[in-house]
Amino acid sequence: MHFVPEAEADRQGAEVAAAAKDPASRAVIKKALVAAARDEAHYVRRRAVDGLVHLGDAESIAIVEDLARRDPCVDTTPGRQGSRPVREAAEGALRARSGR
Image (cartoon, rainbow, N blue to C red; front, side, top):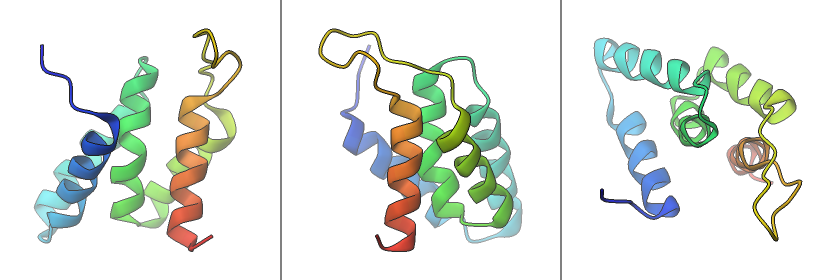
């Protein structure tokens, strides 16, 4: 199995979202990202964050804001115990979007 480093995967997801110029492509991408934001796997929800922020419409941003407030994932990895990777990613993406 091939794993892409986190920063590279985020960049790729953002590029796909940004590249969709026509409404039909954007709708397909948005549908996939919305489904990913609701996935059981925290790493799938984490990956949806950047694409949704890049789409930038009100519904996509509201989903990211909800993930920042309510995502249930708590990391149990030694050294990261108690961190909330999806919430942290969503908060960071929203801060970057607003320029803070």
